[in-house]
Length: 130
Image 1 (cartoon, rainbow, N blue to C red):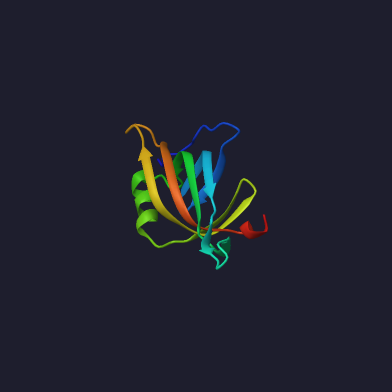
Image 2: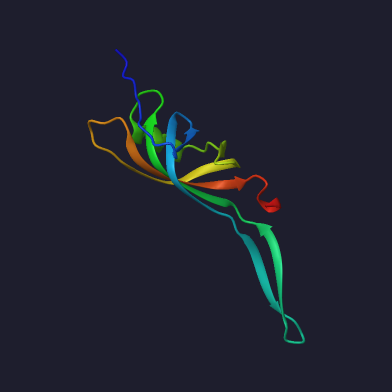
């Protein structure tokens, strides 16, 4: 008999599926920056030049279960070690070319769900128009 993985979430958790893992994110942070150069001109005034946008950093924290009943740490490790890029919508934002750069996972052995924190690096679509 196959195990059915279910996860209790509150109404504020938003689901994000990355490969074979669905994360119900209860907390998140997004950071988008632009590179700048500050120059001193001949008259002593300062001039700031805006350069290109740096990659977006997204950190998601919540609870997760593997979609196929496999080991969650193993599924997350496979996502981290692979070169897969993900595109997804989250809380009204569109993310593209997101790659996992860090992860943290803690769980009790008898439970299929785990507390997970993921950091991804990529592009926030339309960030320059916001």
